[in-house]
Image (cartoon, rainbow, N blue to C red; front, side, top):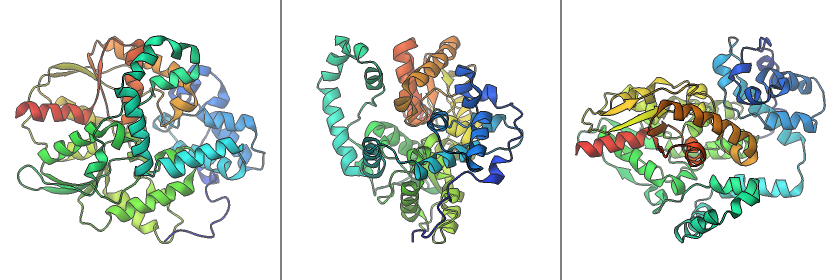
Amino acid sequence: MAASNLPANIDAPKQEDLLRCVHCGLCLNACPTYRELRVEMDSPRGRIYQMVQVSNGAPITESYQEHIDLCLACRACETACPSGVEYGRLVEAARADIEQRVRRPWPSRLLRWFVFERLLPSRTLLRIAGWKMYVYQASGLQKLVRASGILKRMGKLGELESLAPPVERPFFYRNMGRVFPPKGERKYRVAFLSGCIANVSFARLNEATVRVLQANGCEVVVPGAQTCCGALHVHAGMREPARKLARRNIDAVLDNGFDAVLTNAGGCGSTLKEYDELLEHDPGYAERAKRFVALMKDVNEFLASIELNPRLGEVRATVTYQDSCHLAHGQKIRSAPRQLLARVPGLIVKEMRLSDLCCGSAGIYNVLHTDMSMQLLEKKMENVNATGADRIATANPGCMLQIRAGVEKHGHGQRVSHVIEILDEAYRAAR
């Protein structure tokens, strides 16, 4: 049952949340945009100051929108804040407030409607888009275009092409509704939420996730009724479409006897774990959302919490770990991926400097703010290269795409992998 007759300002930043900020400035050095620009209004403290003014009746100006939009919502400031300011909640609320009160030009409205309300929730449209991209990539046309040098003359459009995710056939959609039995005795029964774009661009990662869970005694259910998690919608201020998706996912997995509901995407997991906030005013789903959140875990978090199957073969590589912002700062999960990597025989793990500073991916931030995103990526790759690692591990598909682009531009041919892919290699090596 959907919520109805909610107050118009239900999603605006709340005064009690805004007033937690004491303007101490300890967040400044943790903020990627402030580190790059040294502009107070592009720091968490500065953005909260502007939110307070708008909350007190100041108009929503173009300048205000620009400062709020330029935020990566990486939530590093939350880790640095001594006052417990939930900045992620605030910036998402500010964007939702802008979305409700500002009428965008019709081309922008049309594009946002198509991407957020039609493309991302639709398996059919994502399949079609995936097939078209696959033809472009597999036919050799992409190599030809890149070799021609034309992309360098296309400015931002050329930059965006380099960020286009590779399409992996067959799509993971073929596994929707399937149940994968455990290898050996069943210890857990889990639901796996495979995402939206990931079913097309990270199909092999999703398959590796299922195999690793099976190797650890899990019966893995891929719910057929699941849909996009709504993370990109929430980040864009489109909370009502996100609520519709949240209700569908809750209905898809709740009351089915699962020990845990899992995701392999740090960005998705952060939003999935906050469904209770998203639906807190929905009388039909508020309690169901709390129960859903109690089951929701990142796959690294889950595997690190159980007795891990020790039958791991050698993976000979030197790896450095890049923290996913929404896993490290949003979900407060830092040690679990490192614990799993440390269990792999033959793997040498080297920590990079500022591993939890945003790589510039941030959902679709690298599409909307490409210049800033590329600046952050260059700094990230400097820290990666300094480790001497030949492999880069992370725990979020969006980070993987961004870091792969970074390797192409600034790296030394490093291989980029999800932590789960490395575990999968180790289990296969043992066999």
